[in-house]
Image 1 (cartoon, rainbow, N blue to C red):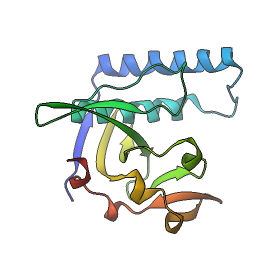
Image 2 (cartoon, rainbow, N blue to C red):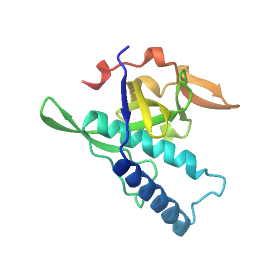
Image 3 (cartoon, helix red, strand yellow):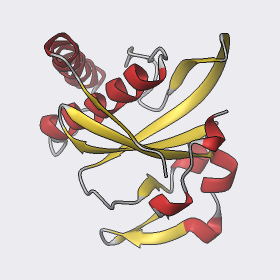
Length: 162
């Protein structure tokens, strides 16, 4: 398995902090902020997304006003701009699985699901899988006491990207 590791520089970390602060303010203003949400976990998640964008030269959808579940990244593949929806998932567990809640199917399946592992500000890309292969009944497992789509890192690949 090919892995790529990236460390965010101080400017990228500052951008992550600004975006997380803005997300919290926007969610509170919209009345959808849940006080059980952990700002540190949001920073980890946003940091992983920023790391993915840095590794693969793609543009992130930063704006939280549309939907928490908009994952539009513009990918450059062989010099060509390709619009794909990519849901970048994060875990702090080195051998952690790629997981998505069951509501994912109802919100719309993304083109790709990618897994980043690490601790802010350093992350490792573990691979990705197309949504139609990931969001399936056979991938439903109990994760941390609740059902979720979950798949082992061994199934992930860089090949799905191209």
